[in-house]
Image (tube, rainbow, N blue to C red):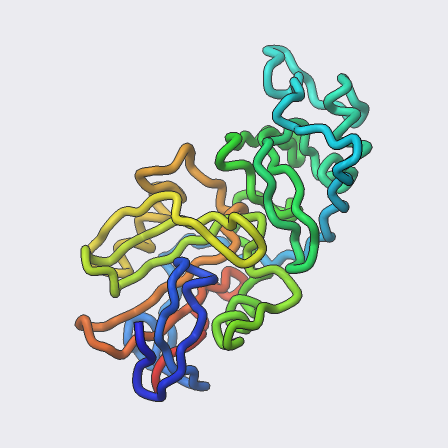
Length: 282
């Protein structure tokens, strides 16, 4: 897709949808609804600010490497499993010794799927299939592991730590910020420019700078798509499971009012319960 207006092409798709979106950056714009001020999300949206998570532990060297997919985890298979700070099996000893950060975050079963580390240059680590946070058990799948990224202050609230980095990435002309734009978690992208209608897509990072779409659902406008995500959970057809809000590292809206060529990109900031302008025409 070519650039619009000012001839600048931004790599917004690398953040949201895996495609290059032609947009023009500017300092001011109307909100997603077209009003002078960006419209807030529907009432009841979470408004928690969380601290930056620690970097993931280094991955083990290839020498002596154990594939997590070959290990049996009692947290995954034992009917009467009880969480403990002490390893209860060889597989749990493996987690504690090899990925101490994950162990400290309550991870008790690993996926063979590797996910990116928190910061852009961090090495990948196996995704979490079973994790205990404040005594509550959370379950992912091998293909869609849990995506909390170490941010365990409130698993039921949308995090806001990626907002600034997402905007930097969108306007970086291909350069990625050193921090986290959602790596290790999941992205929700609402796209009014989709030829089938307004698309609500959920994306997963497959490495530090590339995403794939897990599924999509279509609506008649971005407001309907955003309301659906908050009312029915963060899952669309094609996914294994519903995401917890804390796994959704970024929510973005690509607006193309009245199917015009002028597009704007917005990022939801849960710390203010509002949308932040990221890029678009002047």
